Length: 114
Length: 112
Image (cartoon, rainbow over all chains, first blue to last red; front, top):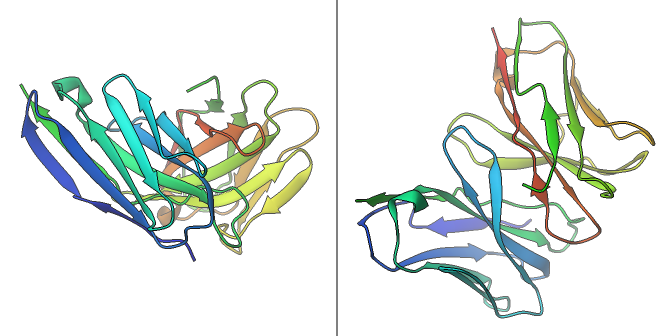
């Protein structure tokens, strides 16, 4: 059974810092891994998708890496801004016996102070 | 998101009533997923459907919950005889094969 852990659970930083959000998963037989952003009371916005054959993906100030064999993914946020404040969710897709469903971590709640 | 629509956005039901949640996937997507987010908890998978087929319902409660994705029309998540513990945000996602899942805005169900 796939289990996903995200560390830290919460993070509060001043504006401008570079951030590292960590995600670990127990079953490495995944198809891909997605990072999402969720604002309070809102839906999910897909930030990055890394295929199982890829090592990393970049979009603007965001960079996500994937080490499938060790069951780890990291989301880097460069030059953080107050608008980055949200909960960030890691979700591998697939794994042994999984049919394409996403398994979510509990998330990292980020607050960036001006 | 890339066009997944869910309605209603907010739904209030009294205990014992039925709740019907609708999801229209991105045009051309034939894979639909339902997830539930209970208050102060993470997102949990409920069911995965393709047109007219349930592929994986391992996350669905055994009773009162059902889902369908007919050949025509939206996917429906039906909850019969709702209880207070069903109060949650229900999210639908769609995808094309094994690709990015795009999420809708969710339906927030409140059971009084």
